[in-house]
Length: 286
Image 1 (cartoon, helix red, strand yellow):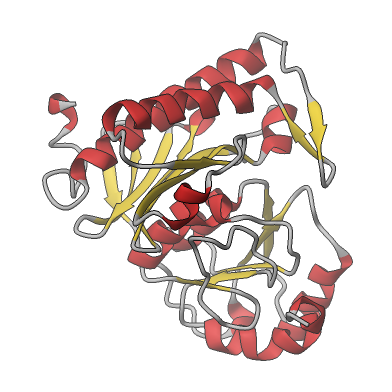
Image 2: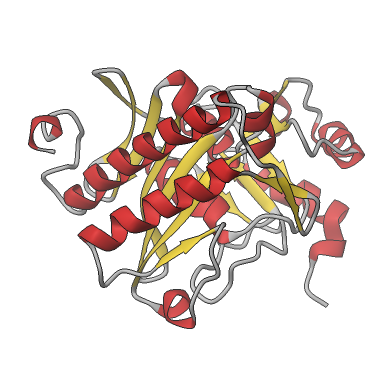
């Protein structure tokens, strides 16, 4: 730990110890997941919602949970691959992890998956780490240190783009869940530039990097562990994440993202939610 303390901004400030732990665990879990996949024994099963889960998902989850419990035994951990306790949902500090975000890309051997570790403090994403194992790319953020990406020994600050009009936005969308609704949305906003990738975390980090400008998910499939880590990063890079009607995401007792997601560079956000909200009225609570 000590030899890396000079590498990452924010380590000696608020949540510095938590940041180093999250980076170490994300990298270790990512390496183990790739090792299992490359060994050819993934043990793929299907979860409710027709979503795959593998032995690598479970192994990575167990590794991260054990690592956090060893360092911060008072902090509950909520993982996609474990049932959360009531205490975890209401704690002042709680870790949210997605051991493999973008499992379909992971199974196919593509780069569009990540390991995500986020920390909620008082119900808001305070720390986030999103690690892409096959690219050796680590996105991270803390309240005091800001948002950065590390590739090897090079650490670069993250900042969203200055794109100010929805029609000029560079959209990033799902590769595995592409629907006709996205074409309708692109037509409504006048968008022609679209990139597809699996992991939600990677999508939001591309926006935080200024490489993409907008992500819209008009479904109720996502959960709090899909958004905690990347929201911490996107927010500190100047971006914004909300539901499709512009309301902030709620953490704590609410795990499901029933009103969809919109992530942006912040500059196009109000225009986007104002124009697409009427397209997705089905997502409003009855």
